[in-house]
Image (cartoon, rainbow over all chains, first blue to last red; front, top):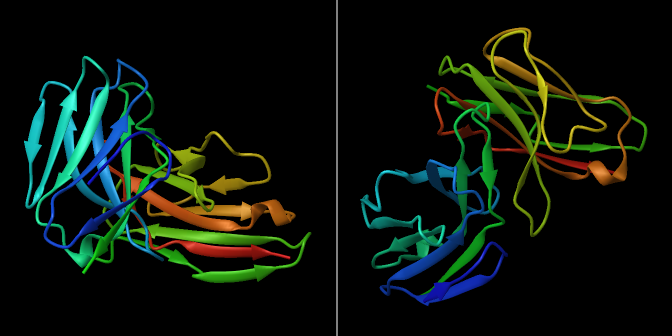
Amino acid sequence: GESVGLHLPTLSVQEGDNSIINCAYSNSASDYFIWYKQESGKGPQFIIDIRSNMDKRQGQRVTVLLNKTVKHLSLQIAATQPGDSAVYFCAEYRAGNNRKLIWGLGTSLAVNP
Amino acid sequence: NAGVTQTPKFRVLKTGQSMTLLCAQDMNHEYMYWYRQDPGMGLRLIHYSVGEGTTAKGEVPDGYNVSRLKKQNFLLGLESAAPSQTSVYFCASSAGETQYFGPGTRLLVL
């Protein structure tokens, strides 16, 4: 399954499938990007990050892709599990911005057993 | 390490009452932040601090005040609560770009 944009859509996938969550960022000067996962009733939790001098970074079951040409970021989750159900936020960071992050609105991921 | 902790976890206020939300971090981070999160929306920055004794306004500072008297603590105050301040409040801290979040405080203003 795949979602687009900074709105809060719901992406529904079957357990075991791969998920792709997309994010468009606004400023070409942004040089660092983070994906956060927020489970119901909890605070956002860091998943993975990527700097603007990279176009791909892999973690455990997660991959972040960065396309600076079109200012697009994606989070790929392999073999999605029920525990992956959460809202996923992308955030961008601009140097000299007092370490303030610019947050997207989030995408809700629902994993169907 | 406890990371970032917030007290209280939940509070109900009447319009016009005041309260203080406490955030504490044990990671020796210089930067601390207060956000609010409303249904269907992302995180909005209320105030932040770049070090002990400093505070600065974020994007939605009106109706809130903050203090950072100690490096490990960041307090968010509501002097006269309004129903529009019903929200979930998150505190975060950072040493670099990555922010680490507390579990949140749910505030209901009647």
